[in-house]
Image (cartoon, rainbow, N blue to C red; front, side):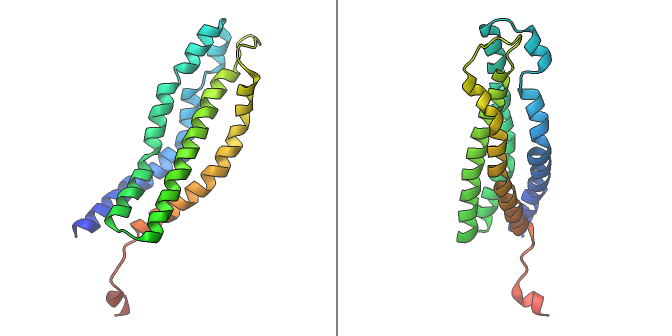
Length: 167
């Protein structure tokens, strides 16, 4: 009974965090963590600009910690109901999450550096290549979302005894 209660509690945490943090969160955090156009117009020196971009790093760290909540739920579910096939999928989820977090952080930090104030070229043009990272992020996140959703569904679905289903 306590395992069932623990699984139910994890489901209560997993589904809202998956929806709010993974599906809605990127839009909110992207707006909060990048240097806005109003700030860009006020930056005149390379030092000011770099300081503004570096100020996004704590937000990126918090963002990735919040995004990790569904992954932590999957790991805990895996401990409650160990199954080798699911364990491999959880490891795949963790790997995809780490890659997606790194790509997302570079994209958001890089997008803060792309805004160059008054058209001055403060930073290497290679930072402008970060504008392509959302495509890479999408390619990584779609399988991650599908895998996390299917694992969450499998873990949060009640597993009745086969004898009870026969009657």
